[in-house]
Amino acid sequence: MEKPFLTVVVPCYNEEEVLSESVTQLTNIIKKLVMNDSISNNSQIMFVDDGSKDRTWELIKQYSESHEHVSGLKLSRNYGHQGALLAGLTAAHEHSDCVVSIDADLQDDVNAIIEFMEKYHEGFDVVYGVRDKRDTDTFFKRNSALTFYKIMSKLGVNMVPNHADYRLLSKRALTEFLRYKEENMFIRGIVPLLGFKSTKVYYNRNERFAGESKYPLKKMLLFAVDGITSFSVAPIRLLLVIGSITFLVGVVLGIYAIVQKIIGGVVPGWTSLIVSIWLLGGVQLIGMGVLGEYIGKIFRQVKERPRFTIEDNVFEMKCEKNKNNESLV
Image (cartoon, rainbow, N blue to C red):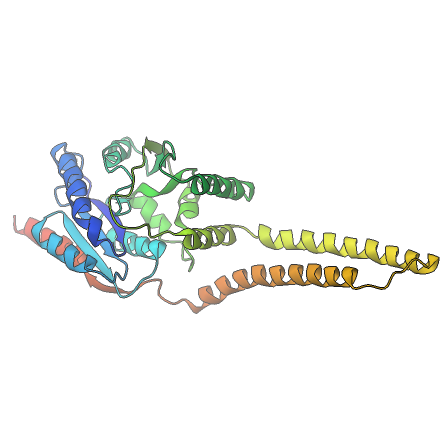
């Protein structure tokens, strides 16, 4: 039986401080899997440079020349984590029998990849890496994440709690995944939609090896908004409910004002007027913002612009070189 070609896709943005250790740890895992006859000796670790401003790409090229299992992909600019991950998965599709995605910061336990491959050989098309606990997170991050999962569940989005983008996809799962053409790709929500046989591998998350997190609070909030608006129209329906409640409150206040006028209990003042203006104005602005979010997604989608642009592809060159060497043999 032919051994599967595994590609480990690693999005990178300004990761020069951690890249050396990432190469070391991931290369050791690949070598163990090769020795165990679990994967092909041509398997690759593809570091995807997402428009880094430091020496990340320079280092990736150096490691690709000195390590047989290391290659890279350079994007023309910064497309964000999900864009870089999508670019890597797309590039890996043609040559790979299965792919594993993992971040470069080494917070996800690389040893779980060995168990990923065991599950793959058992016939699973999707293997989710799930955090066993969130002890390394701050109180705010831990509870905000749990709240997000609960909200998504209430909205009918089938997500895997405590799972980020550490997963394995088989060839056919990746093929089906790439058929989804959303401009705003929320990968964590799309993968469960594939419906293929899946399982979970639990692991303990580590502290970031070096450097700073590329997901500050602002990006986390934007990511959450993207996830919600990509999979549900519930926020628009919520606006309808808020608008209806506000209308009913207005009717009640109107009746109250008429009654006070009849009985002569009207006291001149501006409080009720100001409250009404701010209340209605706030509802309108919130409504415009939510609708704008959806319209903005439609606007970007109908343009059908490329979701990423590849500037340099060392991965493709390495794969072709390995194919030529095999044909000579």
